[in-house]
Image 1 (tube, rainbow, N blue to C red):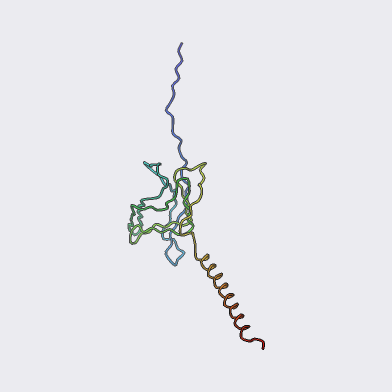
Image 2 (cartoon, helix red, strand yellow):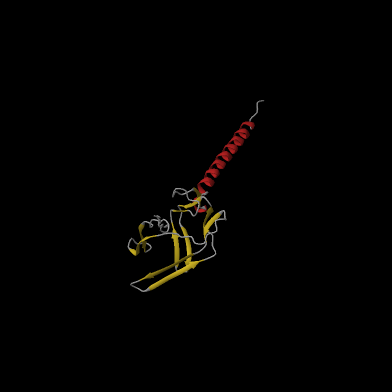
Length: 170
């Protein structure tokens, strides 16, 4: 008597769907929504070459159809290096990042954090801040204040020295 075991195909793990979030667009200077969306959003990389030491988004394409008015907005941008950072790092930017897709259509992100490849335990890697978040103005103002204080002390010292040299004993 021979026993045969039939083994079925190995199934790939099914990733969980992205969380569904609510998005809305308001008219400038208004609190009324003109566009509302509820959706899960995923970034999918196909045919990646992981021999690079950095990654970026090179192309964005979007189409928006406003049903009641029948208006269609579309645009794209190609051959770019958006949100670029090193492998193992996550790109993080609290500032607004706006990309013009067409003369009347923009793609904007705020409080963005993304990472491709080299993700351990589904957690973001070390952070690579965007240049817009590096605010140099407060540092420059602080340096200028220190310089003005030092110059003021030097001028005051020179003034006191000249004042005391004006009268001499006989």
